[in-house]
Figure 1 (cartoon, rainbow, N blue to C red):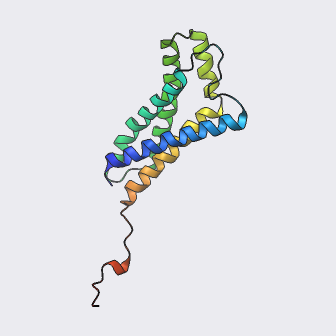
Figure 2 (cartoon, rainbow, N blue to C red):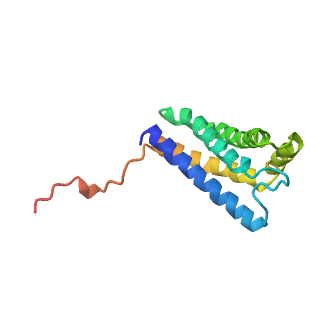
Figure 3 (cartoon, rainbow, N blue to C red):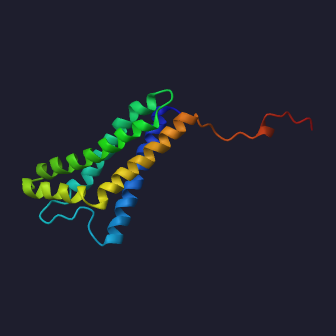
Length: 151
């Protein structure tokens, strides 16, 4: 599978895992994903978009390698998580939130399960993409598919 196709699948998988993880955590803890009074609701989802872009941007050079290393996933996970926090802070300020509330929102996300959902989703999706790339996965091929039937 080409690195570009793997990147597309991994990024879609990352987004799906983040939506699932954040939603389940919100349901289980009976809290909003980003629970900060006085903050516009738009920066939260957009920050997840920033995290998805950061995930794709940092995973791309990893997947372009002939045989990518699993240790490079630490950087992908770290940069994705930090991009989510930075994106939330910058977007909160851009949407008119004061600096104290924006900082409180980032602190709340950084110390909640939301950031763990982002980091865990990045780890799983990136690991799967690297595993497929390293193994040069091909469609299944059964031994009897090579035989010529004499019947």
